[in-house]
Image (cartoon, rainbow over all chains, first blue to last red; front, side):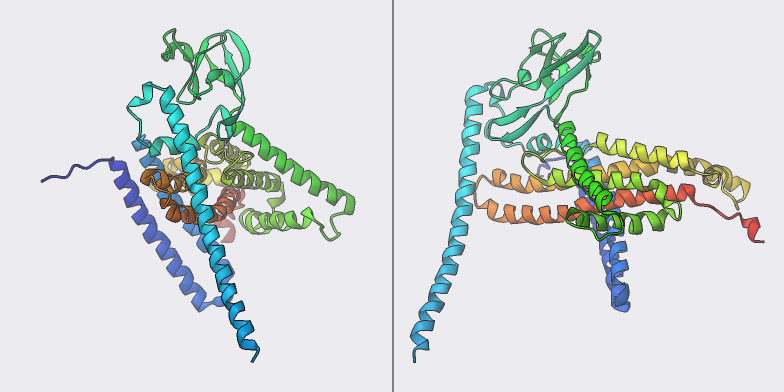
Length: 73
Length: 380
């Protein structure tokens, strides 16, 4: 028996982009926490750079969301 | 001896009060959401009674449509319930300029109707187009009409301009009166650290010693984006428009960055683009088109980053609220509302972060374009 799949491929694309961004942000967080653990006095600089890098990764995922939205609409 | 009878009831009443308080909050929440559901149900009921064309969609709650309707631009500014501000429509066509209120474009049930000016205008999916006699879209004549209306986004931009002017004229007057060396007071002491943050964390490290020349531009885009992001997060009247989630707005900012970067670029910047130094000639030919594309992709990525971040945030909050209407039960709000509040708090961070990132990247691009490269042979 086949299940009918409803929706668009765009949703799958957005999901894949979310996986990529998830891995990316995870790596950034890991790197930042390790860096802070080694050098707690540099915590503020590391945190600022972490947020900026995370925003870049997030932006790539959001590009995919925009493409998915356009594909959907 | 006395402590036991006195303490025990106190303790218990304290517990009871706390429980009653919790209960009250819960009841109030449930009441509010039931009430809003009823209001919406009534609204839908009215709509259905009046419109016969939307019979097919009856009962169906179209999430995508609802969300997109909330994030896009509009010719009227919704206040509450059925009340909204009709914004002026300014059209320029081959028959001349005309100005009229957008209330002529909808009837009392918010359905588009034909307004006869120089052409017969009608709203098609929120955009003013020319209609035929039977009310269908006339694409030929629509090409003659240019829409310069004060839409919701434009009006919201005016609000943010007013807020920015109010803040900075006040602060500027205070500096003029009391001198720049005296300790800041009131609003001054709130704005000064933010301005210093842009100068010390954004401009100086990225641009270098020539930073002062670009400070006005960087501060302007920073505060413009920040104000519009914050206004977009306010769900009711003075806010509520999705200005920084509008690609035309972000494109305008990106074009400014593009022009400023490329007008101020020095010789070595262009050299690094068209004839990368220190490479074999075949590599130089290969790199030139890639670097040239990079000139354009930088502002384009600025444009899309801001647009996508803000729009995605709005969509996220709206879809969480839409959960209530998808499940058609007030109990969905128990999950949806705390999540929406949580996402709203993250959006506050994002609002600041995106303003910061846009400014920082602009500063970085300016810095890259104006950087003084020491020629390799100068060292040898």
